[in-house]
Image 1: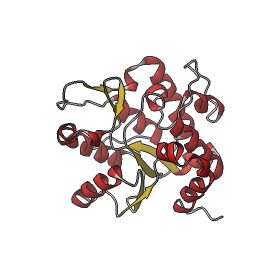
Image 2: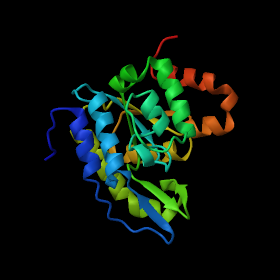
Image 3: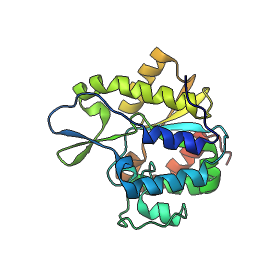
Length: 230
């Protein structure tokens, strides 16, 4: 039986605090769990208690897995130390290193109406709440077939637990990445029926690496798919 929580903040924090990955990984692959770091956990706690201390349902947005310079530092998906301080108003002593995905996401959040409006309606999560590193570089969960095979039961467990303990709608969620992440999510969703519809969105990093001059267009695309009228 799933636990019951007074606020979504407490459900989210309990979820991150009790991640227990038990699956094999290939040579050179390691797990990145930012929530084990005291400083990161302190920032994570501040963020979720600031924006999620209620029981309002949010639409879920599924990323891939945390990167080293965003959630890997702050514990908050797509939020680097700069955006955490300047946009979310949470001072921190982390190294002021910008992260491309965070830059796009906060341009989009600004277009939505700011952090209070956006986080009041949405919750960023990921197919894997933990990151993967190989040879010092970020590794996407789907880039290694053996990792994906062994990791899938943990992934399914994480999705179920979030749906059981956090208020959300099962009608529709969003997926960051229109390629492999969307393909894989669609496959497991068809099998397990987590959501009635998954809406794909171009991944923020892809936008910033390959379509940077058109950032405004992609912000508008996100807002349109979120149902914001121009």
